Amino acid sequence: MALAVILFGCGTRGPNSAFIPPPEDPEREAVQSRIDRLLRSPELQLGAARDYYIGPGDIVSLALVGRPDVFGSTAEGPERMRITVTENPLITLPFIGAIKVHGKTAGELQADLKTAFSVFVNDPEPIVVIEEYNYNQVTVLGSVKVPGRYPMDFGSTLMDAIFRAGGLTFGRDTGGPPPGRYVKVYRDKVTPREKSNLSMEELLERLQEEDRIAPREEIVVPIEDFINAGQLAYNIPLQPNDIVYIPPAGTVLVQGHLNHSGVVFLGPSLRTLGGVLTEKGGLKWGAASRVEIVRHQPGGEPISYFLNARRIMERRIPDFLLRDGDIVIAFRHPTRAPLETIGEIFSGSVRAGANATYNPISP
Image (cartoon, rainbow, N blue to C red; front, side, top):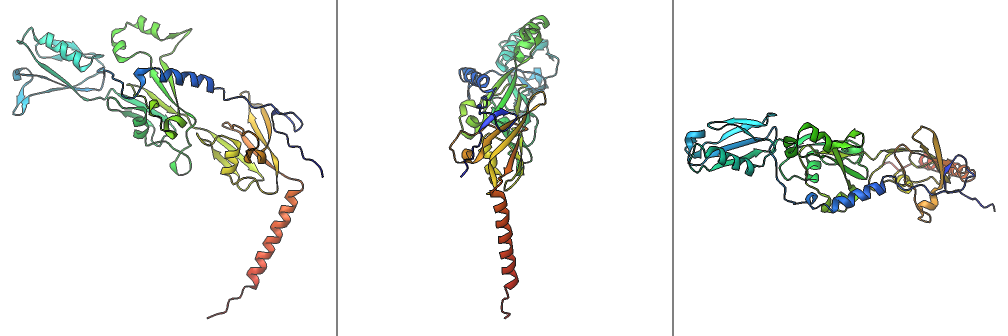
């Protein structure tokens, strides 16, 4: 009895090369360091106290207690002057004229108004209320049902933004490819408050990285821990103008001697050869144990990995991590495939004969 040696290897151009384990995910170490930094940053944690700085698009109402003659009055109390903040950092008010609002909290603006009105009013008590946080908008892109730009309530979190965009897609009936392993948040390095106070030269100096301008930093959150495992430490509060990007996981083409062939969407829990083969119903009985994975290098040159799929699915050897664009090819076994064909012909004949001889008695 011949001993069939199935090569379990990678980085090969033919069937006779020895096995070299595939490299680890190249992003893993960099991502892990960013995650560690994220978890060490208390200001990024859920519920952390943060100030909101007024910016373009916000709707602010102003009132002066006991002085209805300044903004007018109604039967219910002091009339509120409702202002939509524009790109102009200044607004114009009765008596005091122009006053800056960009980059200020409601409390700071209230204190400035008290100082300004004290020249004309004895012991003024201004009231500042931010009615709509329209400047607090975030962009959600990638594997979500309705990507777009959304206004968020002050204190909204990463999960809130994903829900506003309709939730994640997971292929099939959800209308889009499933997400990859990470959610990425791109955040302005300079806050709105700093933007309003820094000169152009100071701003460029803050954004300079070596020989280029990098206005945003990247925060990486693992989907498996955040959503699948429900670790809410990753549910970071968002800031105005954040970009939330959920990269699609990509696809793998599966073809050859399988129960089902076609395209498989990868995802947080579906990333390995064993998982993809299971998704497609597994190998046929007449398939060879060895499968080929064709992967194109960055320069376009293909490289092949040969693996024993049956031993992987039996958990006798480690599984293989697939990447977007991989092609999985299952081969016919030279002995088992002809026997499989004969068996299919025989079983088909038996079914046909049974159908032909079946003659139920009429009532």
